[in-house]
Length: 528
Image (cartoon, rainbow, N blue to C red):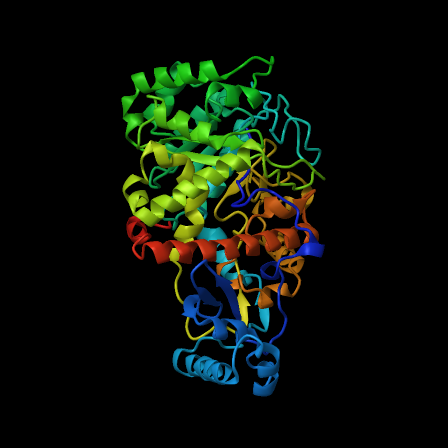
């Protein structure tokens, strides 16, 4: 099983000939480092240097990007058809006053945006590794139409009978646990293929970690298609308090459309039967928060039906949870948004209801209910991250070290069946993406080389980009081609990030106009 993250907007390729202004990057270093946007009611400015939002008059909004670039007479000549000279003069004084008294609307931009320096990277990899993902088998009992290992994605491996050996697994465990001693939490996860096809190795790994590394607290996890979640396997998983993620796309017709058994048969009934048996035998998983679900959405998926299924089915409790992923595109497949597809039509409806819940204040009360699982999975995270952002002062540094992406090997280390290390389970298993192996450990030089390539792929645009302090273009897998980091893919990802951020700003302020307390409920939510 291999899924990918669901973009906040529908997958699409940006048309460079028709770029909206907010997708472009201004390189005018004399203008204030800001981004302008408006709701239906009001004009706003996002100040990049401080990450603050300020509501402004229409005249300030109109002339702000020319302030510092044009003199008074030039600004009057440019904007005089909409505003009087007195209005423009007053607005220019207001802008200067904000610069002087509040330190906003400054024309300060970093002179360099660099990858992390080597020393902190070495420290993180030496003591703070968080998750080890062992690909215990390449064999799978499913043949999902969207699986990256199904043969439609030539840059990825295909299903095979290959299994990880105990020698490889033990070496990976020792290396990981020896270098995670200062981590707040550490997780060992089992992946495939279908990992339960190699249950003996999973048992051996768990027993070894508990005995050999008894002084370290370890959470074990498993991503499974659920087809083998029955019998003794479930007793073992429950006894070890595994975090279990079951891939379940929704109701039978949606699930069986793409998630077929290796013999072509449907799989939904077996999975639901297994879940019923598992929860009957281990009712603690109804409330312990360690059973979660992942649904993959394609263009033919009606998200309203997915939401209704998880809301109405008696198997699911409020203490479980749902993540919705999007189908990964094949190599060369265009990112085309089909505006009338079931996916986008249903997504728009769920998004409108999500916004209505925020404006009315209901969402904070209903967030953990099954009825909100799909909406929270799809829409909440960008709002949450932005609302809980830290303000900056006085402005961005001249030399900025940006880490929108992860440090390969620190947050996750994916170990393939041969014992090679990669940044996570989503990247292509090829020499350029390899960051070490179980014999030599993580290679800091290789990690730094990937971070450097990531930085170079963006060129010089980062230091001019208004999304710089809140950038979330952070996943190697979304911009890699055959293991390399493609500048064109990175540029497209950046453009989509700016489009999403622009829409987020408009939605965020529009919601607060309707309900200034709309996001108060997030105070109880941790970003860890």
